[in-house]
Length: 464
Image 1: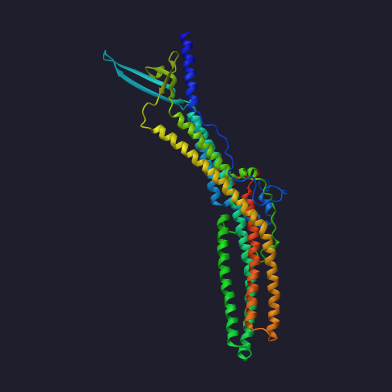
Image 2: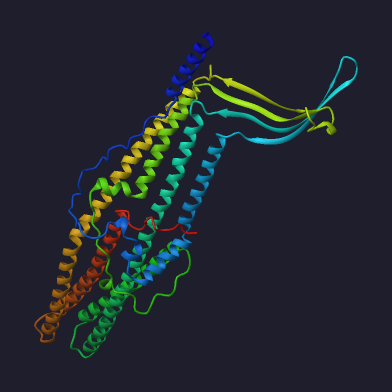
């Protein structure tokens, strides 16, 4: 009866200690953002997370570039290697929970009182210091490693989303460069012809030197813009090559016009439903889970560690007697080590784990707030870029009509040549603005798609 009471007391004490070392219960923190986005969005259409990038981007050239980037981009390769490394770390933590068994043979000789030597040869299986995870320290560390491994997988998805959007943005930049170059080349040709005619008029006394110099300045300004755009095209092309991870084919003779590029419209939905689906936010939450589990491991360090050392094999005085009948045996040596004095190491480790959890919580909340702002910014752009582009196109039409009237007035001697040059400059700037506004509108659609988690779906396979 006394033995049963002692056993019950020991089990109760062990259960109490195990409860003290348990990992804090995890509950997803509330999202520190408003319930709705500031701008309302359409409710129809596929959600970004359900719309594969092959459906969002219809252009075949862009699709091929994205496929090449997913296969060759080094940032994505690093993300994949990080997954493998985290998986290996998880394997190490899981292996710590099981005994390490080895086969060995040993021999010893000890002198006896009668002057003879006693020999002993042992061969068999042995395991050393196998920790029994009674208080959950090893399982908590395993949970930490598992959450970190899953976080690296979400990081890979976030990297892919960013990569897909970056390739699309760089491709749009390149298309805009080609369109601006064509506009500038056409403008330069027109200005050079105007300069030629003005020079003829100046040589024949029909125009002043001021008119000639103004026409010359306007033509040279177009050459400056042309050189700037050629340099920018080279830079944008280099950026696209880096994203793709290798050489790309020469740009086609007739690149797609921005006005011919269409991108699907995606609904924003509610922040509570959308933001938690983004891989970067999932990654932040998994790191929070890992930090929370690490507190359980730090708590378990205050409790005793129970380990077993044992072996099973054969013992004999000589090799010929090994594995013979009657030579088999096994040994088991349990060990309990309870911390008494560690100079505050365990307390410091627990405080560090608690602060790390608070840091991870703050980073998780910041990730949600940053994502909320990205979506809100993209929605604000979607609601204004359409009106801006429409108004900018009307400005270009008005400037074209103004140039036509200024040309007629100048040819009839009613307006000065300065009025004509000002109309030419204004029309060139207005047409540039149309192209740039259309580029910004398309890039904003890509931003909204990426901000809502588009660019990756469960059907996607990791690049190899």
